[in-house]
Image 1 (tube, helix red, strand yellow):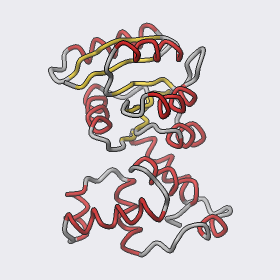
Image 2 (image 1 turned 135 degrees about the vertical axis):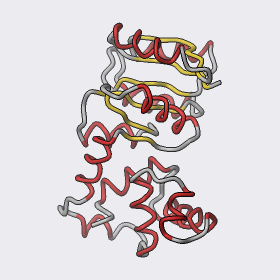
Image 3 (image 1 turned 45 degrees about the vertical axis):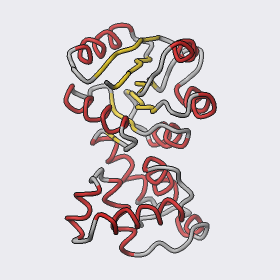
Length: 214
């Protein structure tokens, strides 16, 4: 069972998400709250796997919640929920530990896929969010100076990075590039080391901030 906590300041939205998840056999909705500080009260008393987190919360916003979670509850995986498809929001919350970012108009099927991906430690972004990330990455301003801070990324590593950003699985990347699973994982490990990232979401954030696929 994936233990889920829902945090959003709109009661009807929270009730709607809870109603959807209650019908999923592999989901246990442990709790719901309507402000940032209440999250930590619930976490003191319950084990949570995935936090569905609104970016804009009263008391403590989603970004500050992520910062505190990294220090106090690093095992909780964060899936950000927002009505804002803006690069600044996306980049900032990924930088502070969220693994996924989906929009509030997401349907049940995509919501479940996002929760399962994040639970497994993988990133997940709504299609529109992915497009925002991609557009940000092709900006050329200051790209040459930014890239000087990183070791050289090979052509093959860029191909793997591109497919990671587009949410292909390791198996799909291997098939698409005609390489082995072990080789894909090797490229992923090299990218994590070169870009000083801790996980896939970190790779996406660093690539987005530094226009590494230009």
